[in-house]
Image 1 (cartoon, rainbow, N blue to C red):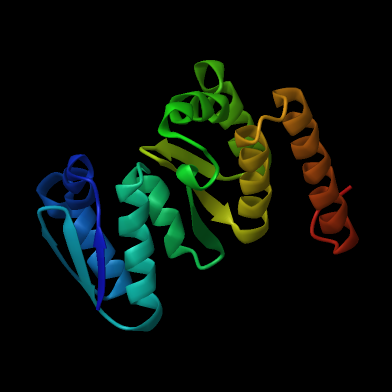
Image 2: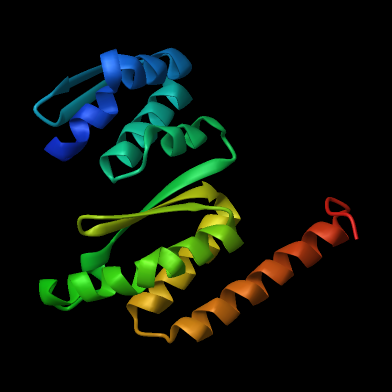
Length: 177
């Protein structure tokens, strides 16, 4: 049995229209989900239980159900980064969230595009969903932005990391020349 709390404004998203999201999570993970006032309890076994927890957590952290369902693929992971771990005061929160998102969402879109991840900046946290290695690269870029690195420097880091990944895939014969 797993227990978690999600924000009240995300409960309806977790349930879905006519309970469709909740039913799909239960069906795909072989679990039983109970939701009461933002308190979520998930009953099940092994990997299904953990997957259902991660999907519910992702939805609670601002991801759409469609993106959260990427976690059904065992190659994808969810990483939640509490922003307050990197800040000295709550006054910095809005500015740091703005740095991650960028003007008109450009920075977040760039990170997502180059790392093949999905990013949600919600409340006092940032969530990232994607393949393990890609999530680690996206996380590093986000941490650099939070710590004040110039956007151009972070973009260069991402491009270099992307080229390195492509070189590894070519070496392993997984990417054609």
